[in-house]
Length: 386
Image (cartoon, rainbow, N blue to C red; front, top):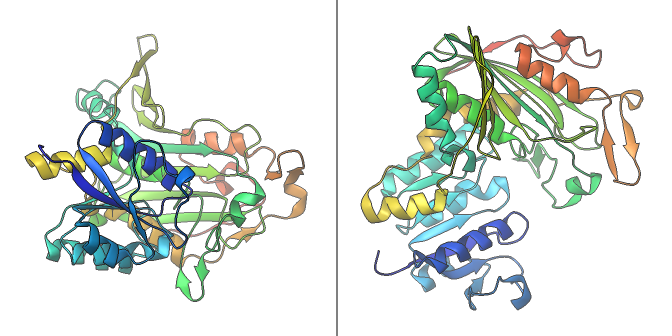
């Protein structure tokens, strides 16, 4: 591409700092140019990484897109704003990198995806793990029968977040805010990649690929949403996917997805692009892979027609999970006797939850089935494919 594509970033603080650094990296390669930043409070010069110059700043997203002639908008704003901002860009013919989760409800997701399709713009959803070269490598192993027949998939995320994490923004840890859906839970936001990656490895990414969802939503923190939860998804292929996650781990560790086979299994640490293959009759084998950046892939798509790695339709199944969590009863508060506060870290931990998270991914069982006395029992529900 002879001319760098002008980009506007909406939401440059918090996780937006990562996008600023990534834009700077691609700008150094001559692929893009940061033309504008949309924030309610403008960034001070010291908040903008060296090398990005002095981009235009405005709290009016549409006006900023118009003034800068942006070709791409990166949207990293609160979850309830995603659809509105995406449509504001699409109506102007501006292509999109939209952070995950793409929307707080399935209806808002459909409104966004349909609007983007009508406008004819490209939209990439920011599940960075789906750019990992490990995914096609794992799919090839499965297709070659390396671990036999796939019997199910598990995901495990044992993370830690201080109580201050839930005070970082008015919408943090909320299911709804001022009557508007937020659904900022452990499975829908911080560890959403575990759910999306497991669905992708199963080949169950479309809305019609999910037929049943069971949830166990709990919270140890003083929030509305869930911080310790698991979900079991039944796919149209007849397989089960269980993802267990917590923000109250005793010993936080790297999240991973397990592909269970009749003759072995594959473990994928998706933040590290690292894969462990274990199979009958062989010693364990470990592999490391590269990753295609999703913004670079979007630029490549616009320049050469390369396929998008994570278009909206590839997140339909994930959004069915978000919708089921949205519609589920409010998360069950864990009694104080089953969690404790680490004063030096300012966070709550649930003793034993690390092992339960790993066991759920390993056995494809929910917390209640593993004997957790604090876990509710929820019946499975059929999922509409509309």
